[in-house]
Image (cartoon, rainbow, N blue to C red):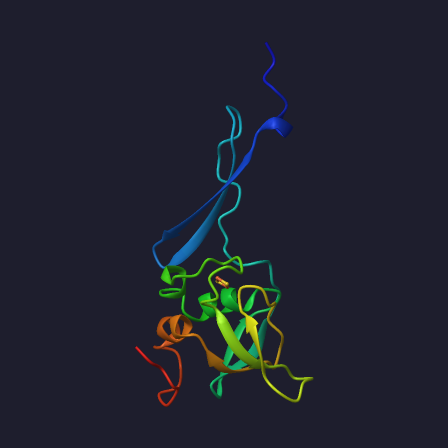
Length: 143
Ligand code: FES
């Protein structure tokens, strides 16, 4: 008897924290395909771009969400933050000024793809807590 077509097997996404980074494991459920296909948390990138957080410059991977860039800056804390990563929890909210704008506005960092030269002027308590060791000493961090 032939096994059913692979197209009928559901794709299962498992997210787990391993060591200092978060890994996304893609598995194809079924008897023949149960191996790990992907484990890199970042989207492919060729270069780092500059962003500014509370006046301090950071280099982060292009083509990634801003929250993923925060994970790049602080891989030991951001994967363990209370983030849903899918626009539900609002814990990733930041105020940010883009290079081509005159005023900052709020955005969800899990949704917004990083833009070179963007400047973050305010962020949620959860983000401040996760990035506290990387932010400037005079950044407004609450506990
Ligand atoms: S991480 Fe939950 S809304 Fe962005």
